[in-house]
Length: 503
Image (cartoon, rainbow, N blue to C red; front, side, top):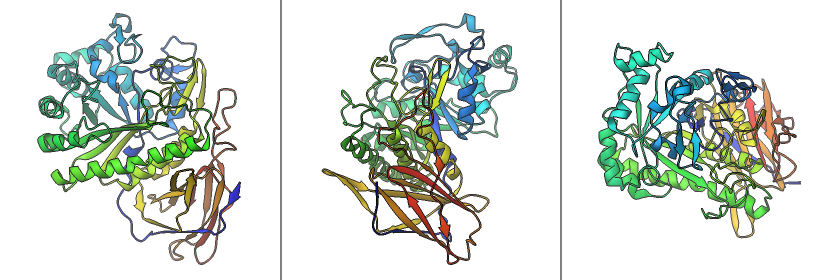
């Protein structure tokens, strides 16, 4: 490993705060897909795996450390074939169904509305429920909202009480369908816009103090026409418009590429593709600005992440993939992009929480391991609801391999309510570290306390396993020093994510 010759100069405009970084940008998805719900989150109350009302304790405790703000459920594509009444009442009496999208396996419906809301309450996060437009009815969606949120003596509320929940739940977010341009019904945008207007009419929280934030199905990556049609025909009826984008090593959905055996072309290629999220948000936001210049409607990136070919020997429809150091940098890269567009992007949900795609946690029977992506979310949670601080970096080094290039270093800063300034840094270069000189206003920082944490590893392909769960974990970074005039010096290692906290 080498270090760049000249230090990089970085300044944080602490006197020019620029809005809040929504905590909801750090949201997650939990779909009935593969082993995300069953085994990953839910093992049942009779399981030998320690659990709390059927929720596996080790996973629950690990997720609590992330301060998850919002969790999306039950899909994903599963949402538009999910009928909520199948998942309530005595578990022995629940209707088993075929999960047609994800492997044709039987879903027992042992994990339903009550179990999900128990999970949300255990995590202390908000619920984002995706409703069924593709195969469901307006009445079905209306009655689900009543079952969840009403506190009157209606038949549905009596049923909820009989099923063990006396008080209503507070549902903050409700998605009216999912990917209705494909698995949610193969609809044209004009048709879906009309369907959205009809369905959302009946999504009413029954507590007048809690208005449900209604999210319309938005575009698949660069389908700008979908955004234009939805904004033109239905913007006044929505609070948010979703968008989905996954980055693939090859860009080919038929042969996505492996998560393992990373060479440098694979390494840089994923960051180039992940950077496309910036372009997509900018272009969709520009369309939204034409119809909504005050930015009332949020852009909700409720599915994002790295998508690889499944691990050899696993069910190809379970989307189980390994999670490596590269994925940690991809996660930080996306979060920094979302920070930048915080005025329009007000929620994002990585896919997914456990055992599926770019997961936080992997399980194998009773064993569990936290992934490098998990550790990035744990480190960077300090930005949640903090005040965004503009940054200037010069010179901006370039990382080049073969015919691909990206800026080698990326940074984002915020100030917490107690005055602590947190600076997160990414070094995409796998071979070269960088020395940083950070100029801080002397009147604002009296060299009180500096701490640093770094996530890196010895190899691009490094990952945690059930037998070696601590190969890629945050460690204390090289000591940072600060002088009386407010100059802070810090070494940013190659292929790393770092967090500097100055208080």
